[in-house]
Image (tube, rainbow, N blue to C red; front, side):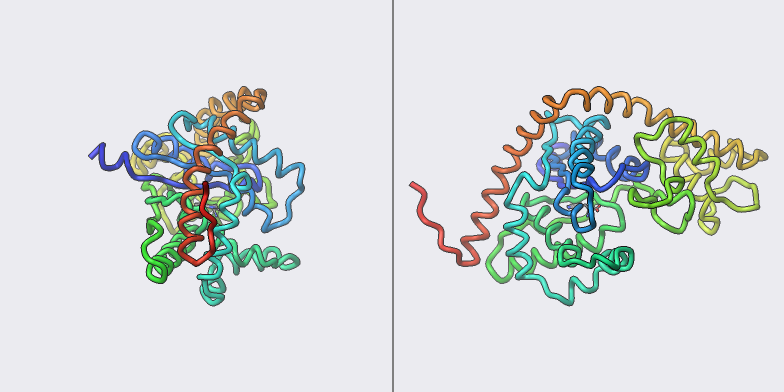
Length: 337
Ligand code: TRP
């Protein structure tokens, strides 16, 4: 068992387009650290994807390194996992072009994230936003990944990646591993505190809607206190009562307690006590991550070193795949001496 899972390769990425949230932590980063012992893990900071919406250059640059530091602060070990920035490996864009020529306009038009983002950024519906899923497919297929841990909002992109890989393999002979989405049981969907029908998002303009991984304790508690609930004042994991359901989910993910245990713990108590408990649990979980983050970001040379090493390792795999792809589609390659 141990042996067979060890060989599987995991690829995942996070966009450095904002401050990572509690949703990113509980849904992604925390689980990624657990995966590194079972799988060969490659984790990428998707800076190329980030510019599909407008970014302030200096902020993007800082966020890219901060994102890497956060990965490390969450316990992802650079000796076990490979880290790099997407823009450092040109094969991502090279493969993206080839895959784009094997992806249909209609397929991309059906992507719900494209539709959502074009509504949200109506003044900047650029071609990159449209071809975003092709670049994401390139990220994954470049490394011949078996499994891709993602939130459920990215499932449609993984489906498309599978379709593109299968189509390419059928047209040109087997080239790509057809990857699978790896949806973790524990990655409960963490919803906005202000509008619990929406996912907690790092780009939400309402700062009270999201808990950020680097938020301080008093901000965390204040945000939970203000979280939207209802007038029933009974702490219950009732999916019909979105706000309180979300808080129970968050508390459960933070503490490992089951929904029933939580309902029992807060029986007869109001939302006020519960919200403070959630806030405290959250601050306690994030405190060591924040401490480590502070140490890491003070050592830029160390982070640069990790990036250099990761880029080198990832490049070897990427180069092999792109050469294979270029040969298969009929690009002339001179013999290397
Ligand atoms: N689109 C993903 C997100 O916004 C980030 C991402 C980019 C990604 N490339 C990827 C995730 C490849 C998994 C695999 O969450």
